[in-house]
Amino acid sequence: MEKPENHAMESETLDHYKSDDHSDESEQQLATETPKSDSSSQLSLTQVMEAVDDFIQSLSSSTDPLKEIPPSVEPFPETVDSLVSKMESSGLGRDEAEDSAFILAVNRISKSVLTLRELRLDSTPVSSWLNRASSVQNRAASLLDEEFRHLLDRSREKNKNNKNADVSSDSTHVESDRCVLQEEETFPDFPPESISTLKKIAGAMISAGYEAECCMSYEMSRRHAFKEELSEVGFEGINVEDVQRIPWESLEGEIASWISIVRRCSTVLFPGELSLCTAVFSSEDHAATRKRLFTGLVSAVTIRFLDFSGAVVLTKRSSEKLFKFLDMYETLRDLVPAVEQSDSDLIEEIKLAQTRLGEAAVTIFGELENSIKTDQGRTAVPSGAVHPLTRYTMNYLKYACEYKDTLDQVFQTEPEQETRRNQREDDEEYKVSAFGRQMIKVMEHLDANLEVKSRLYRDPALRSIFLMNNGRYILQKIKGSTEIRDLMGQAWTRKRSTELRQYHKSYQRETWGKVLQCMNQEGIQVNGKVSKPVLKERFKVFNAMFDEIHKTQSTWIVSDEQMQSELRVSIAALVIPAYRSFFGRYKQHIDSGRHSDKYVKYQPEDIETYIDDLFDGNPPSMARKRT
Image (cartoon, rainbow, N blue to C red):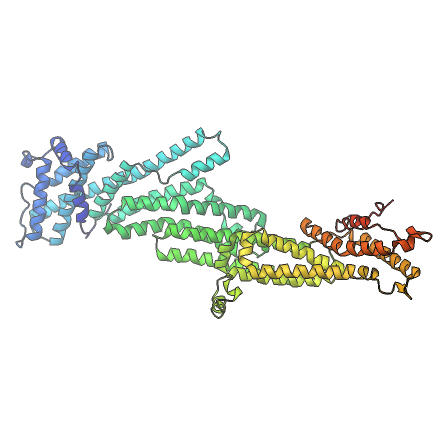
């Protein structure tokens, strides 16, 4: 290890160790155990260090050049050297009092060396003493560095062994139990006494001018620890180069692993590393050191995270990728607080990667809009049922709304914000979020597409049923999801309900308007008497029309049970009273002739029975008519 040239002594660290409860005890204990040179045989370690303190103070206040070292200070390098030898045998971290006394001695010799170097004295005795003290200081710093690394590595190995033991003892637990254990674990798990010793060593090395060596040892050890942790959760298995080549189904698994690892770093590894770094380099003067070390540790890992994210963003866009992109966006968003204490450049890199994911999500969502607009399917869905495009779109939007806060973030662009500022606050659309406006656009495209598809049905009544089915499906999806309902707003929901009622009226008009005309009394009487031929024709036309409606519309589908029931009830309320009145008034005129059953085919009760067959999607059966 090279000796430092010019480094300042940190007085706060020295003062801290002077105030240690075990300092006096340590010095008295080591005074009886430390060999002394002949010139200081009558001085204890405590007395020697007090003499060194006075010597350092005099150097700062004296104006006369120093010619020689005071006799009480002269043997101090040998005293410290003997302490180094003792610590090389026993090691630090075993006796707190001895550790504190040793650190105090190292701090004093470091302060002495640094002060004398600053004075640049020409005295031969002083230079000789300085050379001896520098040699001892260098040896002490080497010991501290070795102990520092050893203590860091020893704790890491202990944690690793404990973890292996935990896995072995819990091997019979179910998977969910293992997940709970992982969530509750702490990282890194250093005992308080180890952290205390590490803190003392770091303070002593930095005070002695060996900050670079101390930081290098710390960073190397923690990098190894980080690598081991990440290897255990599969970080090494993520290959950025394969992202563009592997199929999406396989890439989804890689993304899931990436999300799990990054979240673990956000919640456990990075906060734990920051906590350890803060505890070891706790002095206010070490703030820059802490930031540099923490940034160095998390940067290498984070850059690999961002490389993977960047590679995923470059894959071909498709609608099924939206949710994985949003998961990654949220994961990086949650990573930022975990690295707040690092260099700002790293935070900006994370935010940039997050922005690119957001832009990709916007593009994918835009492609959903385009796919709806350009869907040119020319085959009508049988029986007027809900179109697959409607089901896909609404289920997609329902799932997307689980990310509504995130999607609102990615859709908040400047032009949209300017548009909102130009809106009146009492405007209903003003209250809709950025993502909510995108949802409304998608729904408008879907409505327009369904309107076009409804024209594939030649029967206007079936066209109305198709629009009712799809409109009801959309409305129920919105009502069934608080997120969608809140995003779309009440005005949009009311408008959708109004449209459904209009489709309902259109269906009734197209289907039952002509049926009701058959039961109109106008034209039945001729010269004040009922015209049987006209009456028979009316019953005959009613039967034919009702048979056709029953035959056709029994095969139609209304999948929503409530709407199906509402339709049947409304038809019954429209048709049955009119038929009952017509039947009651004119049936007697038909019964008096032959073949009355040929014309009076249905009883009023039969009409209600057959209405209940409508919209079941089943082949018609007229066998249930009155016998």
